[in-house]
Image (cartoon, rainbow, N blue to C red):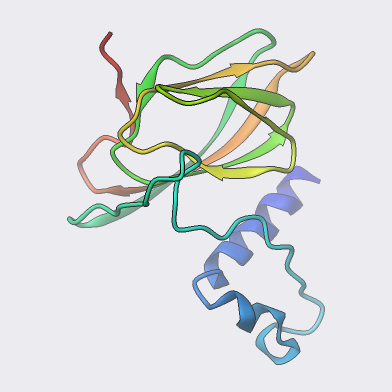
Length: 146
């Protein structure tokens, strides 16, 4: 199921650069293929504009698992980061912002150049698909200094 969902997500992402209105047209999609839009935005979860790297582009995707009661380190991203929660529930806290919870099936764009941290608040592990829109040779995440 997850493998099929990831394949569908990858296909949708590949054609996702077309305008959303084109996705709604029957003739824009091959027969037997449907899409379910997850996210369309030009701002991060903190309502700040998304900014792209300027060098040689590099896309990196990972599936991260936060164990029950686990958390990420306090960190920030110099590049846009798309997150889709595959399983569980997390609470995301950004510096200067209110905490927000995300459940399985929800997607968001991480805060950019702002310290933040995710906490697993589910009864079991939480799994996330994380896609970094980076720049070759540059970090996608930076540990935050206190």
